[in-house]
Image (cartoon, rainbow, N blue to C red; front, side, top):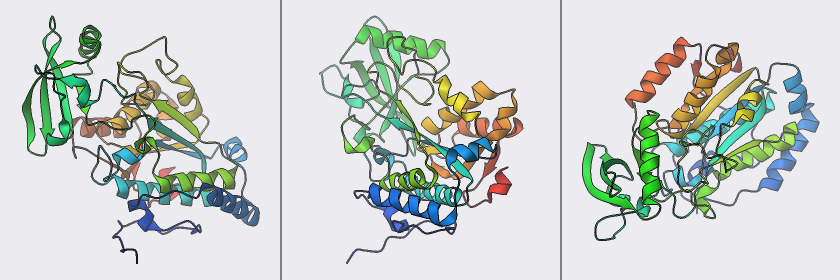
Length: 347
């Protein structure tokens, strides 16, 4: 008998799909995408739903922007974020209610994915004895600040619940001179030091996949609304990192992901409202919001943005840079709501 799992508080569903079980938010399984899609088609036929295109044409449609809701950022993942499964469950509830009530007409989701020697991986970095940095013993995340640019030596600072602490000195195993150039670029553009994490979202691994319950919800939406979700892949360039999905930390004209993803901002303008969910609050979700607001600030589109406050989870809760950005966003007209708010409240 399967052990019952305690689930977080969430809003009631306006319609309960056959695949739905809130305990699945905390489990790993193979999602039945075909059945979810077919159920969406049947629901639309039985309830007279309009297609996503028709809803958008009417000018009152909402899009969900979901940042990096992937297996490796779950609490059971390789780079676990506390509260991630709760946030994904609430996001799925919000999405289903938006779909069946003809409020949602777009889903945009970003997907973090890295090659095996990505610059953000701890194991790419080696100490003076040639041994890899292993952040599994140091809180999963660290910054690397340039110590000796001529020898490409960096000082590693780990982060835990008790605060920052020194780890030691490291060099990149690959492209050491370019790594110095990358560090200089980050500092010259006020992005700070290089962040590294435990190995996560490696291309070809199960960690890249979206949460299985979210996959079923999106398949249901595809059937119910004749909707084609928009995917934003990021992180594929070995020598630069992504936080916000719209732009890498360093431009690369030779790569299709290497510049600003202007088509996503153009897509936002099609919708009456865009609701943001994502992980982690203080990293990729933060930069997704920042990049969006930086490109829409001063326009009427700022008032289209809605942050779903309980559909995100942080590595470091209540981080100062997040609170400052949220305060500025509120001044700029961005709305903040919980997942259980009525769609009228978000308007």
